[in-house]
Amino acid sequence: MIPFIIDMDSIEISSWISRYVWPFCRVSGFFLALPLFGTRLVSVRIRLLLSVAVTLVIVPLLPPMPKTDGIGLETMIISLQQLTIGIALGFVVELLMQVFIMSGQLVAMQTGLGMAQMVDPSNGVNVAVVAQWFLLFVNLLFIGLNGHLVAIEIMVDSFYSIPIGFYGLSTNTLYLIVELAHWMFTAAIVLALPAITAMLIVNIAFGIMARLSPQLNIFAVGFPITMMLGLVVLWITFGGYGTQFNELLSELFLFMRSFQASTI
Image 1 (tube, rainbow, N blue to C red):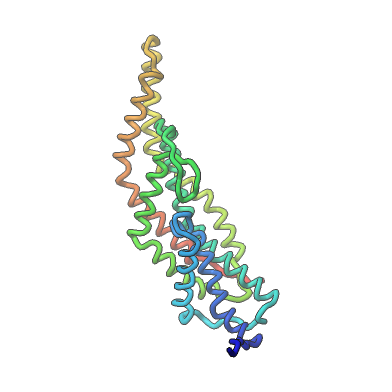
Image 2 (image 1 turned 90 degrees about the horizontal axis):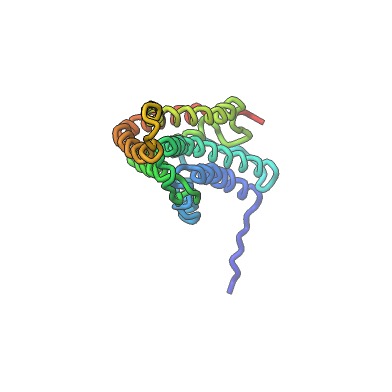
């Protein structure tokens, strides 16, 4: 038998790396942090196949790639940069899911529903049932509104706004990503504010009752009433969460499109 020998010089290796490997690094980093796709619910094999399929589809649409050595320090730096850019794009969308998880935790603590805990299969940690309910709701909305397709489109457009080469995320963009933590806490509190306000009024009423009638065991009576009123408040306010999710998602997509590049 004649052995099969692949004869490739450094120029061909460099062409393959610049044409396929660098886009694959950004795409795989994006799916690594994208909500639902980057969780334990999706296996690594499926995520890898999805990244390869998306890379093969978008490669003909990408701008020209820089010329570097096949294997060298420059190639490794560019690969790490593309992986970082992809993770940053997916991480921004993941913050939106954390907004609703945090909001669910706040509501659960205020209404006494925080005792009901369950394991989050996507993250492997115990969370309140209310927070898990919110997470399931936003995941379905994210897929139903084709948010994953818009996110992939923004990721493909990022190859033009942040072309492959010695370009990374600008300092201003990194600073704005850090500031999203403030945005996340603020949005979570705004979403949970109706439940917090309603429970505050209920607690004030219980305080007045305890003051007027000291013989009444307010803790034994107030706890089940607080839980029931918490469920009622959730039922009343849950209908507006879809509109809030749509507005927050649009805001994040606009932020993702504003990513800027900086040379090193």
